[in-house]
Image (cartoon, rainbow, N blue to C red; front, side, top):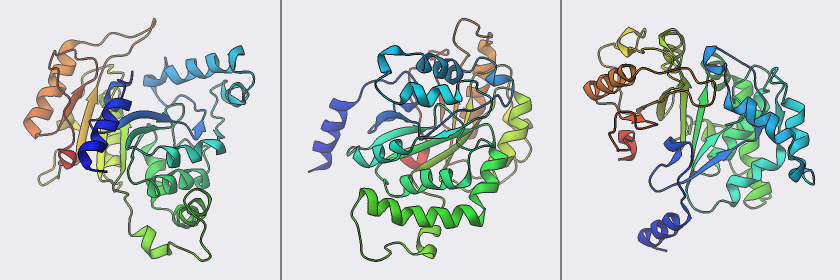
Length: 300
């Protein structure tokens, strides 16, 4: 199959996703929830869409023939209980055309109650499905840094690279991936890692930690945008020589019946900062009327 034929197939399958930053050219937008359940981390979580959706799914009578409502009933209190959905792991292996995958849209992958072993299994799935992009957003970058540098994570990641290959690719009589080989692939080229920072306080806390985590693409989602965010005030972000070629900034207002207002000048300021620094910026709700989808330079 030629690259042109592949693009034609993808274009036919692509539908505009409601999470607009997932509509990445050349990829089918997709959410994927191998882990569900969470709890509030900061004021940006006050009107959490995932919390509302979890309770809605838990009560869906039309889904009673499946285990979906049962799974969500276990986490609907949104008290930090998380649940691993084993059956979800297979899905990326069955998606043949490239997808832009929002990982754990109904959780925070790095939540305090999520075992390292589960997280390693998610990363091994990404390793074995390099045609897809796996986009991970967290409000807990301190745990992400701890886990991704942890020997327990590396050991489990290596283990699952081999066992998932046997389960979903093809079974081998001996180990296919050696420890040093898979660890040398970190950070994975198809994993984008980011933080959500709803205001200056959270930007100052979370972005400096993200700077310490190796990633091919780092993104900052200022959503819901609850105040002015000035990256020049973020510790370490404005230092001379900082490579910004692999960064992506997303911003948008809170939505829903209890949404808190966003001032247009806040998002205008963020756009202007990105323009000055040469960092791609995506206005999720097109507040500024730019009508363009800027991407990290690594993919241009």
